[in-house]
Length: 125
Image (tube, rainbow, N blue to C red):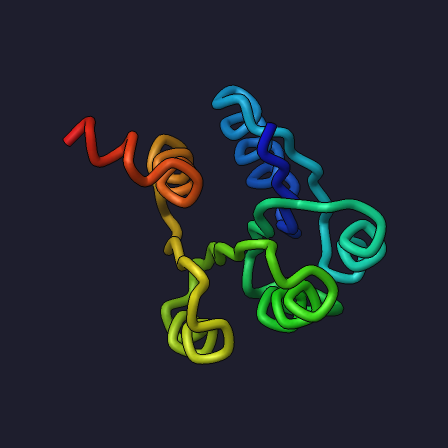
């Protein structure tokens, strides 16, 4: 089963994202800040880091950079409601996917599916 570490500081959003991803058969560990994610990344292997960019204590870009140093095989997807930070995220972690808020939960699941099953998604189109 694909494991996702979700870092999202907004409680309601974190719960909705977790529920949608678990419903799509992903295993999700959710935290409310980047600093909480670091020890988890050091002790467990994840296939995807899904992180909000703007968070207190440590933003998602710094978290993604630390993730790349700890576990370079983990893919990164940013979620953000701020278009200004999208460019900075793309420059800092060029291979990361960026999903801009607002988005439908179905779109998030489709983007995650594309990361891990690109051929099955293209068969649907």
